[in-house]
Picture: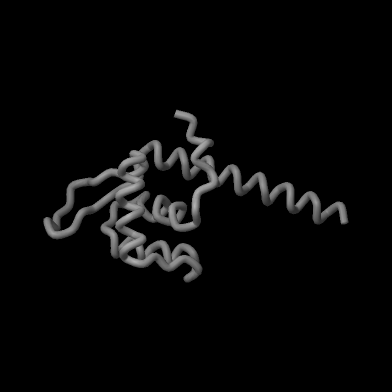
Length: 105
C-alpha cells in the first residue's frame, strides 16, 4: 500500500497516532493530544471515537489487552507509525523550503 497517498494527515489524526505510540484508552488519548499540541488540539469525545473507528479500519491502530475490562486500549501499529514518519518527513521538507526562502530575502 502506498501510504503517501494518505497524506497530509489532519492535526487530530497526527496527534492521536502520536499519542498512541504508548497504549491508551480514548479519554487518555484526548488528554495526551491536547498536552502534545500545547492545547491547540482539543478532541471532543465524538470525534475521538469516530477517529478510533477510522484508524482501526485503516489498520493504523489496534486494540491491545487491558487490565481494565471497561476500557478499550489501543496502540499505533507499525503501519500507523510509518504514516507518522512520512508525515514528519513531509513537514520537515516544507519547513526546510520555508527557511531557505527566508534566507534568500
